[in-house]
Image (cartoon, rainbow, N blue to C red; front, side, top):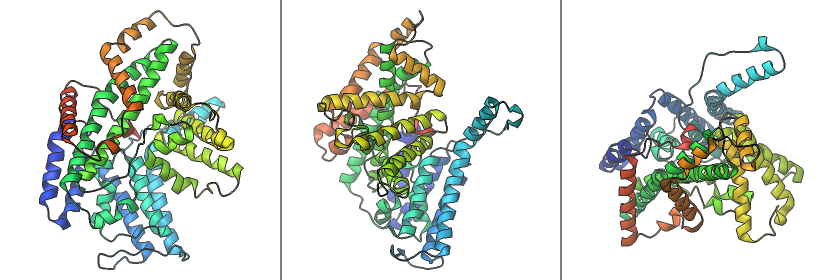
Length: 484
């Protein structure tokens, strides 16, 4: 089930809101949890078993850490950060890490690992060692997100950053909450712990939530989907000239931005409608003046998660310059593989890691730091476009071919002219230009929805009506980050 569907907008969401607000306070989390499990299991009910198993392991691990497995009462306990941890507490943390990363590793990387092994033994001339595994593992929706989310709870309890929680329903609600379950943002328990205990439900908060949902839906339906069609046509073309190649990858940059930021807007809005306040996940990333700044603005919840739970444990910048550069590179390599089990994601992460390390090495003079701000923004965006090729292409050879088209290498075939007739249609071209204008000139949804006036309310209604109308005509309606 996706947010941008009639099933969700006109049936699932109204039913969830009606029963949630009709339920007594103590039953609200149960109602929200049940609807979240229905939402998650809609495509494949078996996925619910994985979600429930991950939730149960981390819930038990948290209780074991605070040694309150059979305690009663609503007040959870927090470990003293200065107190040495016992062997039992360390075992509980390891159990959480192994269960979450084990599930993620098997379901996300089994096919990649076995396939890569077969290619390697073929390459070195030992075909008899091929595994030829017939089993193909299906990737459960959102496993990358809820694994990280649930794992962060165990880390934070172990480190004394947050208190463990005794109510399994409350914890299950946190892990499975459908607004952010399958595509983020990655919500940490410490960010919503107090809200799980008590939060307000106000008309102002609900109205802002509706505004977030409508703007996010418009981003997805009116901008991301048409830009996605341009990108698909360009990346699937056998031959195209340099202009068309740059046009196609720029359209993909708009698609992935409006797709994911639109989903994040809808997730934040839905959270507000249920009384929760989630953190901002995007901060106009294409206005960045360096790659370092880009990663402070893009998918903020993932960037900060990798910083706090991977970069800092590796030593961060506390063990000398050389180690800092290595840590940055490792974190981004793993961040690339987190996005997808393929070598092109590995290269994408490695490129960003190398650029982050290089900018840190150069300091304030980072690469093109002396240029005027508009040029710094333009160059950063161009670099991001080049790296997006590896993210979008199905494999490394396809990425190399597309980069060759962008560089103008090789002669284009006669049929390449047909592509222009498809991607430069007035509808697609107008959508592309509107996406560019909004990307670099419009206020962010987070800021625009802080105060709602009658003109804004009318604009929100118009966006929803237009999005719902266009949705009926679109057969192309994927959420990109669902596959991660």
